[in-house]
Amino acid sequence: MSHHLLLATIDEQARPLSIRVLGAYAESLGVRTTLLVILRKIAPFGSPVTFSASEIQQLTRFLESEHVTHVGFYLMTASLRPYERLVRALREAGFSGVIMAGGVHPTLCPEESLVAGADYAVQGAGEVPLGLLFAGAAPETIPGLVWRKNGSTVVNPPTEAQRLPLDDLPFPIFRFDTDRILVNGKLQRLSWTMHTRYAGWNGLLYDAVTSRGCLYRCAYCCNVYRSPVRRAGVDRVMRELVDLRRREPRIRGVNLQDDSFFAGSDEWVTEFCARMKTEVGLPFIVRMIPRFVTAERIALLKSSGLRYVTMGLEGSNRINRTLFNRREDRESFVKAARKVLAAGLPLSIDYIVHNPYEREDDLREVATTLNALPRPNWWIVALSLTSFPGTPLHERCVRDGTLTRFATDAYEAMLNPSRPGAYHTPDFWLDLITVVLRHVRPELGAKLIAAGPGNAHATETVRRLASTMRLTQRLTSSVQQRVPRLARGISRVLRLLAGRRAGRIVDFF
Image 1 (cartoon, one colour):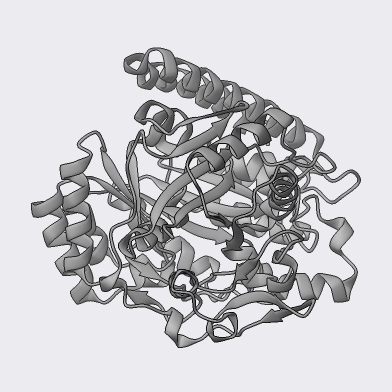
Image 2 (cartoon, rainbow, N blue to C red):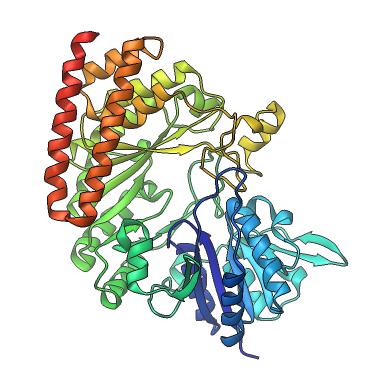
């Protein structure tokens, strides 16, 4: 019997990297594979993601008409309950094929991920378990498989057999007009137009990974591949990107998604840079770990096409060390950030907000850290702290009895601070850290930090500046969408006006 595998993900954007990777492996085994992106906004607290009768009917018709035999889902914690509802609806509609799930949540909570109506879940990397399932192997012989035996759930432990050499994996699926997207209640082909509309960066950057695993062991996170970090050879990476340019010339850059890309050896980075420039010729984005940042590496990467850097600050020294289990500190972060900015590269800084364990001293320290950075080429991406089950952070929160203090809910409001009555970072510090500091001179930043929320004038100043700067961003974004050529000039004028207003405020402190 021929198989047809439908691999699906539920997400806010069309960014199905995980199912593209796994789908390519399935196709290398001779299994017909179709990808499905189900677009859904992250649900606010108490407003779960649901599916309409029309959507279920469209999906069921597709499964039947395309003779789909297996359905696999990539699950984050926030997609577990929507997945559970969808499995129930598909079974009620008559789908009798195999249903399974893998990804972050099955790795964190394997038993919970084997929902009613589903046949399997997979803990850890999915290629080997998937291949063995299609080969007809007995469930008890498949590493990482979660299955049922005599009414009980069995969790086979993950093994080294799941850690395939990255050089041996096929290039991820990246194609259009073959796969599907469910958006605005309609199941339709995932065309290039749909991709550019719903993927990040307007769909113009290709998501790539050169390694699996992460050097960090952050208490709030789960990396499916864990340690040690494994890296593909530069030759394998170059072949993928050269093939991409041949097949899809509309791509304008590469978004390297590696958690530990910058932790590679100097030899690997040097070869990567030389060949990226001569063989691929596309600009790229990387995520950096502060302690591995050197001026020499930055210069090398920039010369080969590096155009944008993401790096995590996350919290104060106390929070990072005692709560997050992060080895970086504010000194290593500032040192690395200054090197990135000195090279003229934009820097996106991840920072975790709405943390019930934070104190005003932590917030003041974070603001002081950011105020030490040269302006204006950096900004903050604020993420609401979420306690994911199966993580060390969650275990601590259960012990401390703090789960209900989180503004997010891992299952239905992941990263969405919407729980009534929960802890939120005070507005003064939230606005100052995430919006205002990068736009004002360090001397004004220092005065606002020193004054703090107890100073009525400082509080009103930060509120007004944040409001003005958010308006500037909205106007710039609107112009960018309608008249891209004017956006940069208008943004400069608006920032200049906001800066002059901020400059006049200094005298009040």
